[in-house]
Structures are given as structure tokens and as C-alpha cells.
Figure 1: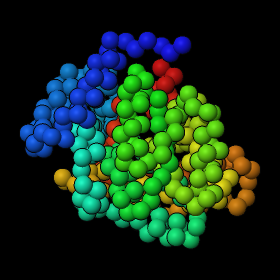
Figure 2: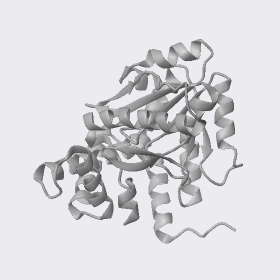
Figure 3: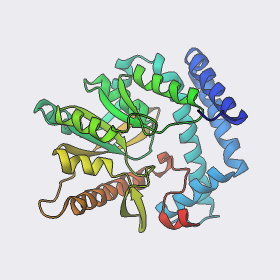
Length: 302
């Protein structure tokens, strides 16, 4: 029997439903200003999520907690996070050609060339910028793909999010509560020359691979590196960020799989190489890294 949603869950679900229903028909600039105002209000209240984002950004940048520079960066981070929500409400009604035209991409050839040669691709990305817009771009340039989504609460919100992403052309597998064969399904997709996109810097399964990330230990999802090790697909890191009023995607060259070692050793080496690419991308666009949760093992231990 499913857990009854709380009053707070129902309010959140209703808010998202209203956003997807109304925002596409409202003028863009005034609504964007409202979302910035809401972001600033949340930032000024310094709730738990804002303090966690500030702590994470402090580790990434070296800026001390309490410094004016870190405070302003955290404010920019909250504005970026709220911009993401504004954009996902607008995205279903946006012209796909406009989404493609307004997206500045480097490294797209790594995807195009591998797929053209019949080789599957896994795009691994941190929680940055507007990853749903990046997915719309990928579909718009001819690469529908499969992804895995965290099961949100309440269930009605999760179903609405899945419907939103499927409407953009994605195949969405639930992280939990599905048939329990996500890895096999993803492996099947890339073995057939398809594309898979996966968030890859925060482990939600308790089966992640330990890596050094910005000088401290954390666990990253095992799925992306393990797919590369077991299927021979091309594992490509992608950094997604806001580029003025438009969007940027930097797709890096393939993360190589070592020729020597056990499967576990190879997976760990690939995960560490992926973490190092993410470090560079996050350092270049720290305001667009939407990590409002504990990430490092020492923080989780507290």
C-alpha cells in the first residue's frame, strides 16, 4: 500500500501542476523576475538547503563560509536553481528548433560520430544548469535517449515529471519501484547503438563507487562507469550551464576504460576520471551546480 502524501507534498505537487499549466502562457520577463525574487527570498531566509549549498560551494571554491563572496555566489546559485524550474515549466511549449538554436554546444561530434558508427553512448552529467533543456537539445538533434529518474514524492508529482520528460522525447526508467532491471535495460539500449543520459555525481543507491572529489571522499553512481566497462560504449562527460539567456553544453572526449585490472578496478578508475572532469566543469560554472544536499562522506557521517 502506497504511503499517503503529506500536506506539504500535496502543496508541492499542486504548485508544479499549476506551473506546467499556467507559466507557458505568461509573459517571460515578468515571470522570470518573480522567480528571481522567490530565489532571493529563500536565500535570505538561509534555510537548511541554502546553508548546504553554501557549504558545498565553499568546498568547491575555497571561499570561507561567512564571506561576502560566498554569500553572493550562493545567491547566484539559488537564482540559477529557480531559473531551472521556471524553464521546465516553459519547456513543453517551446519550439524545439528554438531550443536547438539557442544551445551553444562543444563536443557534439563525440555523440554524432559514435552513434553514426553504431556504437552506444552514455552521457554522464552533474546536476547543473537545465539538464532537461539539454535533453530537449539532444532529442532535437536526432538522438532520443533513455534516462533514470529519482522517484519523487508524492507519486502524482513523479508521474507528472515522467510525463513531462517523455513529452520531450526521453524514455524514463524509475530509479526505484520499477521492474528492478534498470542496468540491464540501459545496457541493452547502448549495445543496440542507442544513447543513455545519467546524472552521475550523487549516489542514490548506496552502491556507489568511492572517488576523491574536490579533495574529499564521496561516492558516485556506479552505473555510468560500469556500463562503459561492461558494454564497451562511449562514456562522455557533459557539463550543462546557463549561457546568458541561452544555454551551454560542453561534451568532453570519451573517458577511457583501462585495459588491465578487474572489473571493480576498471570501474573505480573510470569513476575517478569522470569525477576529475566534473571538478573542472563545476569550478568553471559553480553558480549553476544545483547541489543542495549532503554529498561528501564526512558530511553524510554527521
